[in-house]
Image (cartoon, rainbow, N blue to C red; front, side, top):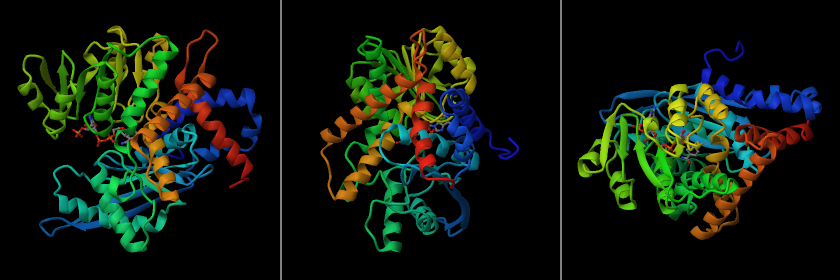
Length: 433
Ligand code: NDP
């Protein structure tokens, strides 16, 4: 705490991991204690913070702060998204970068962990303002990244449009067309299925949990939060697999559709921007809009938080359990508070933590890097198939390290230990650095 004052999210993420790891290393790997592997893992290899000055449409100068947290490169180049949101600070980016190390290790692809972004708020900005901001941001970031050093991607507030502006500026400054960012457009080095990958991968992970318990997703009721990239494709895949998706939301409120979204309704939702209230006006017979409320009050079998950190607190978790929810799988990063996770574990419901359940996005980013390196573009079917295999392998790793004597799978513990071992072995092999 003293070393990282004012970093509650980072301390929350570290506590969640070390609570599982400390008993494990004491029992099985005292060599890692002697080598201070954990102490080294919680210290980023490098953090850069920089000024991003840019001109708005009124020719006024705006100043934001940019960051890149390069957390761990033991098993590969740093990899992790960029987040543009007004609440971005070092604590949030350090928590995300720390989680990313374990997640990337779990994918089986040789990538280290990083994260970055800015306190820039893209909401309400014009397209040209977004472009000027991205160009200014990349003008500094370019000296710290590279296809074999650090390969950023998108996150909240950073989608294909922003990646395009960032990539264009990198290419111009370096005179080099290379796979330095992932999430690129399909015509200029992107991978098929990358936009869908986090949401689809989440559903493949949920399917693994259900298969493991001899159950099927068909007919299950699913509550999803968020209406962004992850939530949208999670909903699409859930519907395709025969589940009934009853909610989607954003920071202003929640849509509840008692009959469930169809693909057609989902496409309509995708046209609304942030004004979700319009959905209930279009489908008044089945849908209602709940301003300032989250989805966790609605009865569901499966809850998929896909918006942001700490969006399910203890009271929300209790509501979910009371209403019969048996699976919580995280599309977002750390959407459940520590108290909420305790509620899931006490109730013995299946809990898929973000570092396992949402790893599909970075996994396909890893596949994008491979395609860039060999100058190829794989078919959507091939990428989707590989994504499915990766999610199945992550599930197996979680079961291997997280299964308790009574048969209950503690996926959080499984993901923490499974993700840790590979990175720790690499750090051990590479000496004291
Ligand atoms: P987007 O920017 O596409 O969408 C974010 C969604 O979450 C929006 O609907 C937004 O609503 C909502 N949201 C944001 N903040 C809040 C809040 N404080 N309360 C309620 N709703 C909120 O981001 P993504 O879908 O890409 O990311 C969502 C989550 O998934 C993040 O935690 C991200 O780190 C994680 N993730 C993303 C991956 C990816 O591939 N994109 C990979 C792995 C994890 P509004 O528009 O009103 O702000």
